[in-house]
Length: 174
Image (spheres, one colour):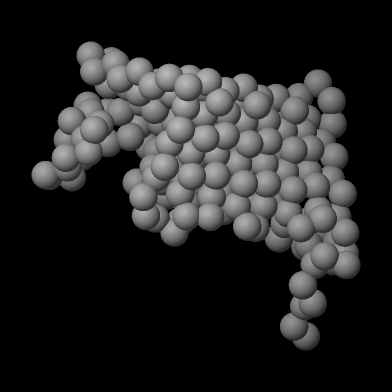
């Protein structure tokens, strides 16, 4: 029973992934980006966001010291007239330094987070902590395969740790 609840909590953590269109929220809508400095590196097909980066979309929020968005250089949607529309589709997003991701369902923090569009995976490293309701999971490396809804937490040189509060779990239908 506890294992099933733990697996359910871990599966819920996969919801923090950005959909294939590189959004930070499944709600879609406008993405609001604030940072101390923004650099557009056209020849390298990337955008650097530096200094107290705060990205919001719908009810989701990503904060980090720096965020790098790499583009494929292949055309995105025809007629895309956004500032970075000429860069093509998003290849990956790398958030570094004091990374926090918050949705109404969960909170995650770590030293580094990488979203890879091609494999639809999120990897967080460095003192990773995941919180959902009053459940907490901690480790060194978290890998979430979004489409497969598979979450793996590794302890690195230590061990993983989970605290599951049964009172915060929804009642099961019998």
